[in-house]
Length: 218
Image 1 (cartoon, rainbow, N blue to C red):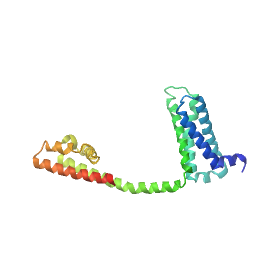
Image 2 (image 1 turned 45 degrees about the vertical axis):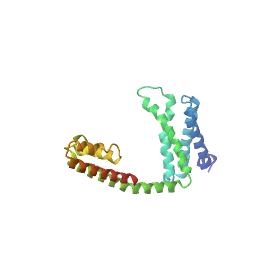
Image 3 (image 1 turned 135 degrees about the vertical axis):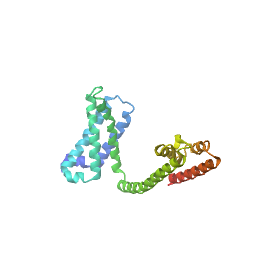
């Protein structure tokens, strides 16, 4: 392995490069029009591109792409590459989209994640938590749809602005689950119905507010 390969394959050197580039991006926010900041950031983008090329050459594409972090680095570099063209373009309708890509250079700072200790275990734990939460979310949506249809059937004629059809009812029940102005719903029904039906509406929606609160606690 020659000196160039050792340089770009040294994780400690690349960590320092990422930290310096992140500092440049931070201070660039204080001088958004600075040509020096743009030039330095472009140099670091080229440095990271060269890192990817050298690693692919050294490890081989299959081995390189087999690493999750290498794939992450490669995508980040590709996302940042369009920023290299921004110094050579002047603003116009046709180039505004390209110029806006200068902001994607911020993604390079995410490369710092790979150096956090036990980050892979953290990602695995997060993935398991998301998978477990998915079933709770699906159950919540099913409950939301059921009560939307039921409420539309019960109160559609009394408060059409809230329950005129299942779509409007869905939004009203969602508001109720978020405890936002929930008392307006039974009050609107009570104003256009008998006292007994109004009492039923208040009990019904109080139960739904309770169930919605339980869903949020989960």
